[in-house]
Image (tube, rainbow, N blue to C red; front, side, top):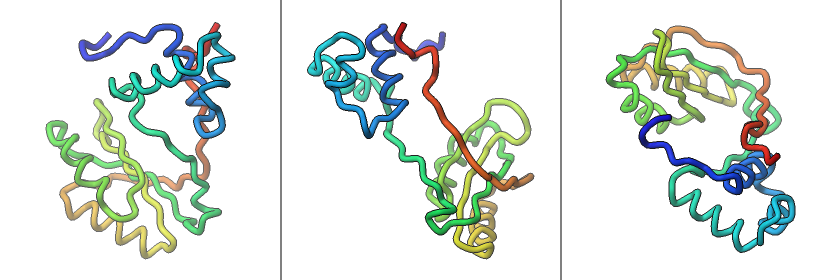
Length: 156
């Protein structure tokens, strides 16, 4: 376990499971009923998880194609390992970039997801990424993405 990890108790794991499943449509009271604690406890634990940096954000899954952005591309990029974090910070602010993942190993150690209305917008975004010193090695068209809660958080 990394030194900066913070152990989760059974209640916190269960709260995280239900929030990952559908944070928008579940209330503290509904979570409380499922895990046999009070709604106040759930609210306090959520605040604590946020304060501890365990819950960092709440995300909306967007169907970009339906929203008018038919071009969704995953760029496989290379940066010097010592510059990965700085490169990720630089590239996330570029118009058209929607996510960045730093990888520990491999030559393609930065994955950048971009979207655009047109092919020209995608080309411009790639050009802007390369201008900050990131080498785009390959690209893949993203068709779909699925997510699910981490099963190990599921209450017994």
